[in-house]
Image (cartoon, rainbow, N blue to C red; front, side, top):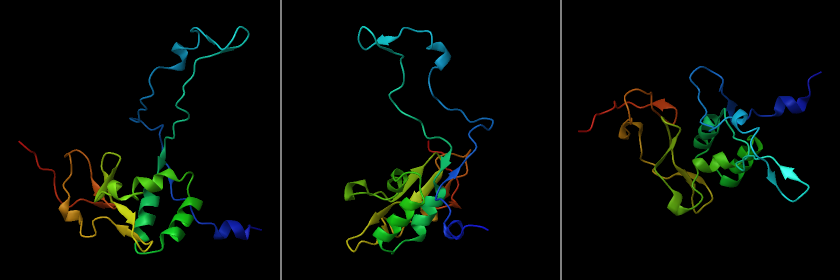
Length: 166
């Protein structure tokens, strides 16, 4: 019998994307095979440690588009409730603040995610409600940055075409 808890659980606000597909390149630097027989660092006379990265694990292959659409759908709602639900459905909290400004200097009319996806910049107003930074910004106001890609604003393809500047 299925667990009722699983039935009521909402889907995560991110998805995994195929990073092993043809044409996906990760600029990671040198390969481990070029370093493994190199010199080792010594902590003291008895212990040695192999060289390793201090950058930690890279998080690749996650698409947070569902999160951004969720946040835009919650405009005008209580931020604390929206934030609580979003955090419960995410692997980490950081992507929320890619689109929601933490303070006034960080507010932008729109935010570029990746090369060609634009989303409305959001912030929490004085009443604790989620709001757009530029409430009057429309798809028609934006122009793609190149002609080779499909650019979107809040998930909708931009209506304007790329214009060469001379």
